[in-house]
Image (cartoon, rainbow, N blue to C red; front, side):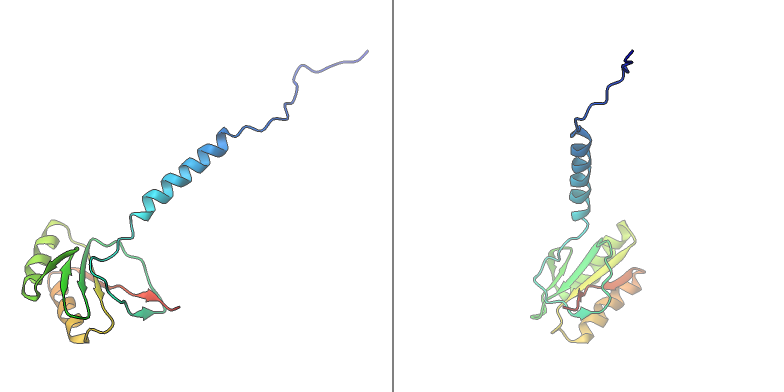
Length: 130
C-alpha cells in the first residue's frame, strides 16, 4: 500500500522577492546620493587624513582667484556676513567652507570667524589623501 502525501514541494524559485529587494536598494541609493552636494565654484580642496561627511546646509566657497559664493550664489566679500546672517536666521546649522588650497589662510580665518560669530558650526571641506 503506497501512501502519497497531498503536499507536493514545488522546485520553482520566485523572483518577485528579489525584484522587491533590488527596487528598495535602488530607492535607497537614489535618496542617499542627494546628500552629497558639490560646491558651486570649482575649488581644489586640500587633503586630510580624516574626511568626515557633514550635511551641507550652507556652503561658502572661495576660489584661488578670490571669488566668493554662498550656496552656489556668487557674492562679494562685503556681502558674505549679511548673506550668512540671512541663511542662518532661517535654520541654525553647519557652514561648510570650500576653500581652495592656494588661498591664504587669512581668508579662511575671516570667513570662519564670521560664521562662528553668527553661532554656526563651522566645518572645512577636504578630500581624503590619495
